[in-house]
Image (cartoon, rainbow, N blue to C red; front, side, top):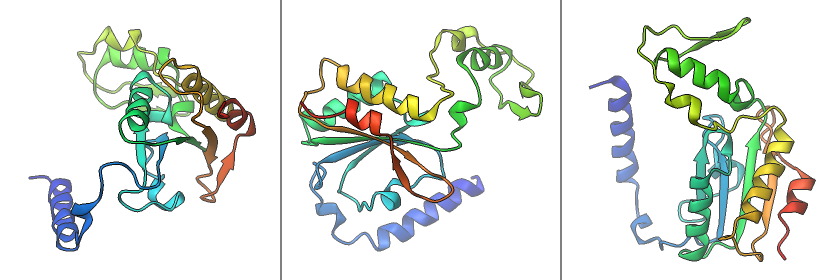
Length: 193
């Protein structure tokens, strides 16, 4: 067993010991909202949004992007579990700003091993084989954080399965301060009708 696996299982045993009545939490989130945010390990939505277990749905992916799957989760969150407000929260210093879909496709075509980055950019250090499949995926990278929040809020609001009366708020989490900074244009685009 790896040390990481051992650590996770030990932490889970401690969690189980103090689980208390959490097994009685209702399936729908008690505060009736959902958050779409990045998978970045520096973000803890429970802490920056004041959440406890059972409060809200938190959907995470690379960049906190409004991918088809993220929108699928939001629609389920509303239709079956009663959320009626949604947040899109990106963050400063996001890794999705450091490459393009073309770079990712090229790296994956060389090998599936972890790449490295230095002052000359990304490079693959694996021995292969790779796969050209990565060249056919939109990795949803971006160069302008605020614009990506506006794009994602707008994409969610334009989706035919998203009710007009759900507000979608747009924010950027500041990794240096922990503050949520509103992207006013995104929140305007996400207003409930």
